[in-house]
Structure formats: C-alpha cells, structure tokens
Amino acid sequence: MEGHLASISSLGQKDKAPAYSTLLRDTLSTPNTATVAADLHAFVDAVVNQDNLLVGRQILTEVVKFLADGAITDNDLKKAVVQDIVSIVLPKIVSYEEQVIALRSQLADIFESEEEWSEAARVLMSIFNESSQRAFTDAERMSGYVRIVRLLLEEEDSVQAETYFNRAQLLVHSTTDKVVLLQFKLCQARISDYGRKFLEAASRYHELSYVGEIDEEERRHMLMAAVTCAVLAPAGPNRSRVLASLYRDERSVDLSTYNILSKMFLDHILRPAEIKEFEGTLKPHQLAKIAISSNDRLASANERGDGDDGTTSTRTGPSTVLDRAVMEHNLLASSNIYNNITFRGLGALLDLTPGAAETMARKMIEQGRLRGTIDQVDKLIWFEGNREEDDAQGKAGGLGDVEEAEDTGAPFTKRWDTQIRITAANVEAIVQSLTEKGLVKNVSVTA
Image (cartoon, rainbow, N blue to C red; front, side):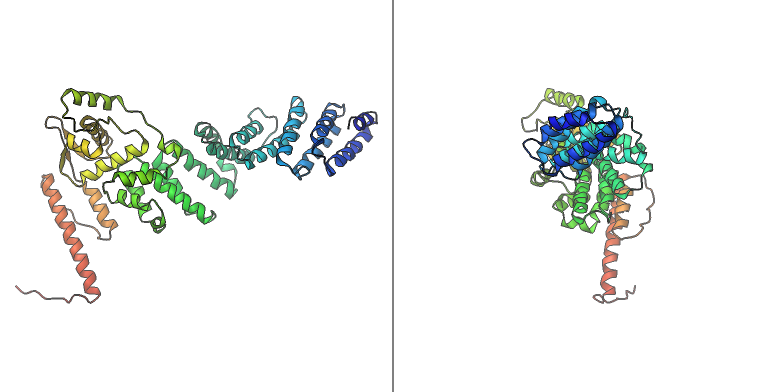
C-alpha cells in the first residue's frame, strides 16, 4: 500500500483521482481481513493530507459508499475501520463534514444493531450538534432527535432523553412522515411514564394502542402499558375516568393485568397476593423507591409518643410508587364501604402507622381526590358520598338519568335515599328485561 500511495503522489493533479479510485477498488474488492484496516488507514491518511481538496472529497465519498454497500461484511472490523477513518478526518472536519456525517451515521447503525444504545445516541448527538456547519432541514433534525430519544430511553436515561424530546417537540410541525410522528408520540408516552406522570402516559399509550399502522403485538404491549400506568397513577376522579375507558376496552380482558384493572375500577380492596403478582410485570423505573415525607415521620413519632400497644404497623409511609398507588386506592375503596373509620383502623387496613394513615387521607382530601372530613379529637375520618360519581356510574351502567331528590340537608339521609333510588332502578331494569323476553307476565294490580 505504501508503494502504491508513493507512486500516486508523484502523479499530476488530474491523474490522482482515477489512480486513487483504482487503488481503493482493488483494496476493497477482495479485502484481506488481516491487512484491510491498516491499508485503509494509510490510504485515507494519504488522501486527506494531499493538497487537492476536490480530489480528497471525491475519494473519501467513494470510501463512504464502499463501506455503506457492504465492502466489509464483518461487523466488528467495519466498526473499527469506520472509527479509525473518523479519527483521521476529524481534524479537518470543516473540509470533510459531509463525509464525516455519513461515516458517523453508519457507525450509529452498527452500535444500534449491537444494542449499544448509549454509544449510538452519543454518535448521533455529534451529528446533530447545534454547532454543526451543515444546515439540516427541520424534518431531518426532527427525525434525528426522535431517534436519539428512542436510543436514550432504551438505555433508561430519561433525563437526557427529555432534553432532546423538547427539541423535537419544537420541530414536530415540520414533518409529515407517519413513522416519525408515531415514534414521537411513543417517546412522549414513555417520557411521561419515566417522569411518573402516569395518568398522562396511560392516556397516550391507550391512544396509540388504536393506531392501525402499528403491529398487533405492539398495540397489545401499549394497551398493557396503559393499564400499568393507570394502576400506578394517583387515586382520584381523573384516574377513575382513565380506568373506566380501559376497563370498557374489550381487548383488556385478554391481558394478564385485567384482574387488578377490574378491581381498581370497581373499587375493590386489593390483597397482598394480587399486588405481588402485578409487581412482577413492572419495569425497574416503576419500582423506584420514594422518599418518606417529613410529615409522615413526624406524625408517626407523635403516635409512638402517645403510646403504642405493639399491634399497630411501624411503616411510616409508602416505599414505592406501586405501594403508594395501592394504599391510596384502598383508602378510596374503604370510603365506599364505611361511613367513618378510626386512624388506627385505617392504619391497620393500609399497613401504616395511624399518624401516617391520617396524613395520607388528609393529602387526598386537600387535593380533592377524597371526599370527607377529619375529626382529630375523636381520631376519626368521616367519608362523604360522592353523588356525582354515583350518578356517573349509574349512567355508565345503562340505567339512564336518575332524578335528584329534594335536598334535606342531611348527608346520611341523602345517601340512604340515593341507595334506594339506585336499587329500585336496578330492579326496574331487570323486570323490564325479563318482561321483554317473555319470562315474566304483566300482572295488573288493583287497589
């Protein structure tokens, strides 16, 4: 190789390009795996450092094309060769930026095929660096940023992924490519998931699960991700609406997480065995530990100071996202069972100290996710019926509108009247259905 390069360097300028092309073709037509890396190193070094910039660009473009067309089939060898060429050309990147970008794109593809996500992302970042001299179109930048976000999320680097997602979000209007837009929406859902914005993530995953262009199995995974995020979301009216849409999706019945979805939607109390089974389906970031608040610690310390019979739990708060979601759900479910409950009784139900149970109930009441009042003198939590939710559930079940009763000002009388009205409406609906099927005859009643 050295002899050939020396002879080419003595040629005239117009003869150099054909000579370099012939030597390159001969070198890569039947590459010797033992010497091709060293030969290409010497070849590229000579081409880049010769005087004619036009010849250098032309020959380096041919090198890039040969590598892209698979002149070197061994992946590890190709990766080493591409990295070596980039390191040679990098000092003169201003003159050879187009070729360096093409080589880096090939290198990113190799890293991605080997599932080296962070390395592939790092290479793409160097391509789309803001200081790059090449003027990329907005659509090209959008596609590049989305690819970087996908790679970083595979590596579970959600912080840096969000940085590039925000850049892509500014350019989303610039492309009409359906694949890129779908990838963008999926990244949006995954970033919400990693950021513990579970309600937002659940809605986005569920929306994507209906997109026909996505493979059936992928849509099933997205539906399952939507259920998981909905379960992990903070208990309250907003989560109830998301759970309702997922529960009524006929595809949810086939999911392994349908049992916990149905119990969440129907406000049934979850048992430890069911929680343990669901926990096995979670990803590492969904099992992250959460810090126990100072209020929980203080309330638990005060409770111990007031005396403890040794039978109450010593836990001062939820330890994981799942733990918190289940405790809040069980607290909300208990409000549909009991009119009131003591701090100690709620602590026993949630496996928390009485003070921590009171703190959790207080936060949910403050945030409007639980209707009730707290009596700290008697250490009781009084639950209030949510008329709007009762009526909404009735309408969703097909019972139609139920007229409002006269406001007597007594909450327990209201609840009792509502229960009677709903029960009567249910009985009426059953009788009407049986009558239509001819199973019950109309009987006239005379006074």
